[in-house]
Image (tube, rainbow, N blue to C red; front, side, top):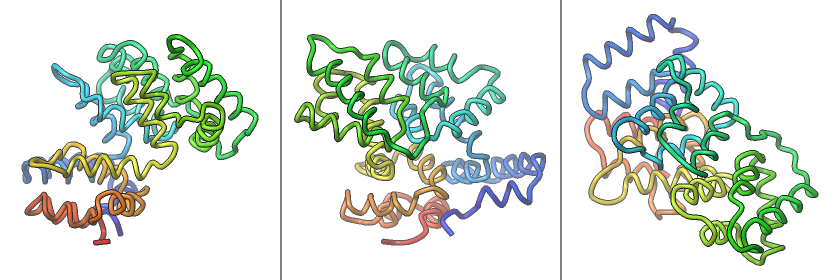
Length: 277
């Protein structure tokens, strides 16, 4: 089993009032990163993501990397549930919060993602892929200046399988990868967001493995990112993330966690990780 404390067990056996009492007990009895991890494990997924989004926009600065990660890796259904949880917890819509903390094309794209408007169909349309690829080419490489709205609409609304086909068609038209065109045509957080969408469309576990690699690399550990990915993906695609982490780094996620954390926090993260590859 990947997670130490499975949230489906809580939904089945623990009433909401008891769940709240359990959280309060954990907060009172534990401390530090271990407390944050254990509380995350007993928090419903949508509520957990809503709180992570709030933290990423709280205070003087905005954690754009966290915003991008959450909004690009959640399904449209998940985003709708997160939006409901956000309003319930903070009495303010997620869209209003994003609007007040971000700006420009970055804000426009985030709002589309936050509204859960991406098509989730697994079917692909070759004709649409060719059309969208041509629109993207015309919006960037083929003109002086960039039509940012064209990039936003296609990358934020099309399904991931459809985008993968579109990127192949784009390569045929332009002789360039879509990533290279985005880097050449766009900048700042908007560029970062669209590149993240491309990476997720191609391989979401690889994108998250890279995020974990950066969280664990260097002198300090980014526990905010580490906890979020380990908890939120523990019952979705953590095995795939582990495999991608090994490909990227040459060593296992398990060993990276073991070398960068300690105590009960380390033990719990290793339980969630589930094994050494």
